[in-house]
Length: 143
Ligand code: TYD
Image (cartoon, rainbow, N blue to C red; front, top):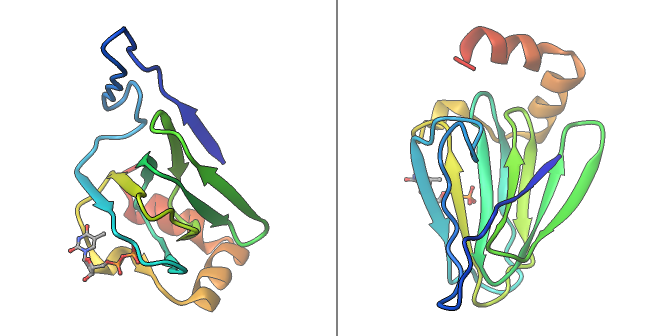
């Protein structure tokens, strides 16, 4: 689990965070999306990706991320606009406990591709437990 702390450029006007690919972000950013107005009690995500890498930044409000690599699970709070959580491929993720004002922004290494999703938890567990996931990623991901 890697949580980045980005360097804000602060002055008496306020704060500014700038993110550059391969400098602050360890991949080429091909897609940005964000979630807001998330209803109370909602859990989003509930999938892994074969290739996709992401950085999650809660740029306003707060939420929690549960990461599961098939062996251990961790809950990481995202509460600051200068924190970024790296989520590798082959990692099951759930986003929950959104504050009403939360804006969760995701920087993604690939365009949206339904074929990259692993949506069944047992399939995910079999992939990572058999060690297939690593070779699968190396074979089909350009990473
Ligand atoms: P969904 O996969 O349900 O989001 P989450 O993983 O957060 O639960 O996505 C919601 C909808 O948005 C679904 O119809 C697919 C669409 N979508 C895109 O069109 N492009 C994207 O980059 C993403 C992430 C989702």
